[in-house]
Image 1 (cartoon, helix red, strand yellow):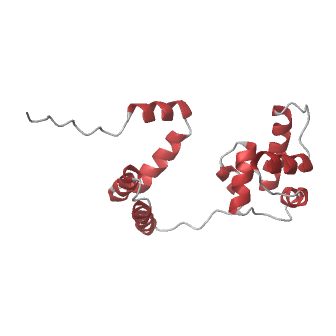
Image 2 (cartoon, one colour):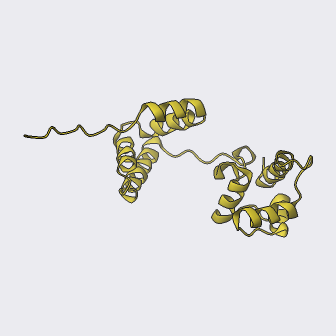
Image 3 (cartoon, one colour):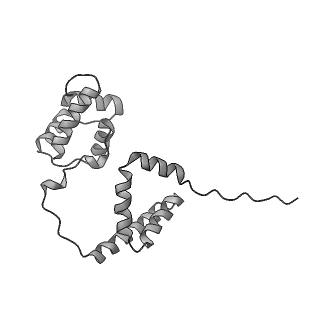
Length: 164
């Protein structure tokens, strides 16, 4: 499915969700985005996206539409099935690049210590790629994720005994 087809489908779903009993027009989406999110996206821009005249969104517009339609920003791209597969990269080269990316991420997010440490632990794992692929499959199961997040809380530091 192309980006344009996805936006058209989301306009239809949004119209019924909002009680219109029909798809929202591009102009209605534009107006609602402006009123509800103080964002700016024109009807003509939506038309260009849906027709394929503009095949890609800017990052800001993607986030704005994702918030409006209540979808993950990653949904607002063309599906890969319409494209030729990417050439395979040798596994060790891919793993090395992934580990470097994870290490850079751990440094960038060092202010969030648990996140930085988690990225570094994955980078150090001998099968870091498999860890991320596995995690990706888990996050699709919302109930499991909520349970895991609730059950796996960061350890609390032990309380020190006061000396009398």
